[in-house]
Image (cartoon, rainbow, N blue to C red):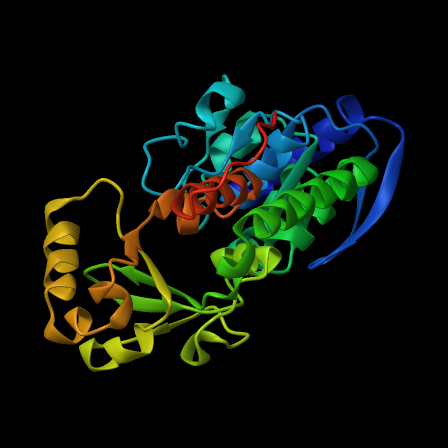
Length: 306
């Protein structure tokens, strides 16, 4: 029933709303003709929302930010009246259709099962996956929007920022950085093929042998705490410190094995923002990570406008 209604809407939109000029875009789900100058874009991933805003495109609707009623505080002012469409894994198709978009951007790893319904609403393109591919996805979103050169320049600017940080830190870049996420459901050691892993790699930090893998993360039990060792340990948990999350974090940090780690004994184990280091997953959060690292290492970077 819903699919039939969406198909009817697609026909109406094709006759009245889509610009005449279009380009064929190859993406994770095939090829799609997209408008040259889309005016009403819907974005269905958190990293994609950051990318579009950074490229100067304000979507009419976007996936709800993780752990937020609508959108993260650093995005809300830029999003204005954009409609929250549900989480990446539970997109509200009726809301999407009501916005009458002329372009929908999502990710196969999240929305493959609803691709047909989305395509019935408007031309829909998808990245393959999320996480470690966030920079490649940023460039992809730029190309889809006809802003490929702008995206390329913006990626180069981020890379230059990371190199400037590395130069300022100096010998500290040789530190092996360990990253851990604590939550009641699971504890994970984050490896190279993750959003924060890519940012650390841009700077040039080393990773401990147990984490120097082209994988996203590994779930561990307390017996694996020794694999959290590094010259510095950055850990994150839910930023809102909900009772269950806080209790779980305190339990792990009080464990004797954690207390024996050299970085912990030296005061070089530090909590960082879950939003910036994990949940946000996009270019604004990457810049936040770089700023955090600059503060932690006691160096100053030139102010920039994002």
